[in-house]
Image (cartoon, rainbow, N blue to C red; front, side, top):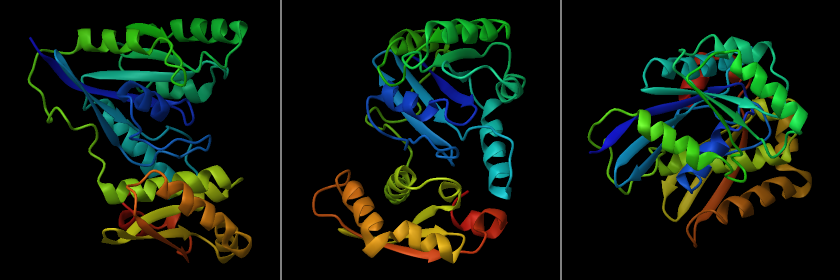
Length: 279
């Protein structure tokens, strides 16, 4: 008997959904950072075992939007809730349960699984408070986990598999994600820039591969204002140089990566600009 189905992670920004997906799969399929809106697309990760295939769908964090992009990211995340077999509502154990968490909780069905993540970062008192708040939601099951250390993750996956319906595999056994190579390279570039920039700039950064003639890859980094361009490039090009080195370390040996920074004024507020970038 084989069990198969689709599972989504939903929650506020920065609760660790992408880190959890990477830990479950044992490989990196989603970029991570401590910045909101790190995940901007639906990203699929496939876990295939002899008796099951679980298709996980990682989503953008649901938040109070301030731009057209934010509204679109919320629509992407909320759109997955009705399309899957199991919804997993993810909370941050180290952060108090707030109105934003309640807003997301009100969107998910009562048979959802509640995952209280980052237990390695939370004090006993904070974890107890978060578990009490989560319990009041009266969802189907509760799992305290650490996506960083892996604590509790196997028990969570086991429970998910038990709940899946019987069915055939949807994807080949060796497929781990649906992310195209060009999209992945652009995401790696954006991830490295997120690690090196602060304040509002991370929201204004987008990346896209414009030329792919292996081993040559040209990636454009887009910002919204001329003043942001210098920050991304860095003094004497240092920031962009560091980004290129860090990204190439994660790509096949011999890859030639060219990074170009351009200004696309207020792209977060322009639907056509967002569509060009795949949002």
